[in-house]
Length: 268
Image 1: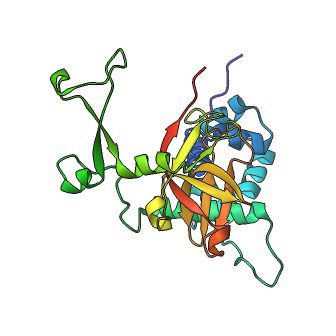
Image 2: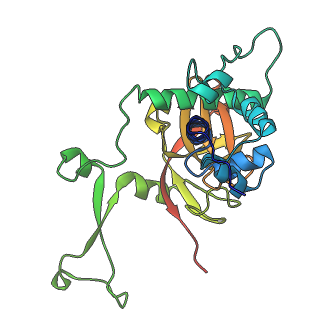
């Protein structure tokens, strides 16, 4: 028996729908967030990626997706109108929103801001070596030879460049030890992480690794800003919770953030 062909219009609609599903998932959970999206929908990971590839999405899955992401149905189906539903104002008289709702609203705003482009210039991670400012905080340390004997001037100029703030952090034991695999494979359980002595402005921490104190417990996470909130993201998508919120308007003790300087991972 001949197989019925899908109409071209139906194929185009499914193709556009899959593209928008992938777009929303990337904005909210990152490039590698398919597993997190599948977990929240109660689906196998491969099934979700099939939907992103153009497989027909069941109505109940679409409804759950709309509920989780606050996407406008008209935009999801036809690409028209606003992308997200307007979130209620935080702290409204209707009652305090749950942590999940606050996190969802912050992620939505973060995705909208990233789509519109950065508002402020972000300080580069490292300056170019030809820039004089690159060397202003760098010192030279003499290294030991292969057999660990002290080198002399006859051994040749063998030095190791290090930033002053790196050495200061080590000298002052200004570091924390990671517990768990939230930042794997960047930093595993037991890794030692040094952090800056002074707090930077949140806009300068955008997209950087930070040490954040959440309920007086130091955590190492990726940092993004979304309005009055800071979004802390784990590198490991399997870690729960994968994201946390920090109120940037809270008292200083409740919003301690420090830039990560270096990571030392123990080896067996």
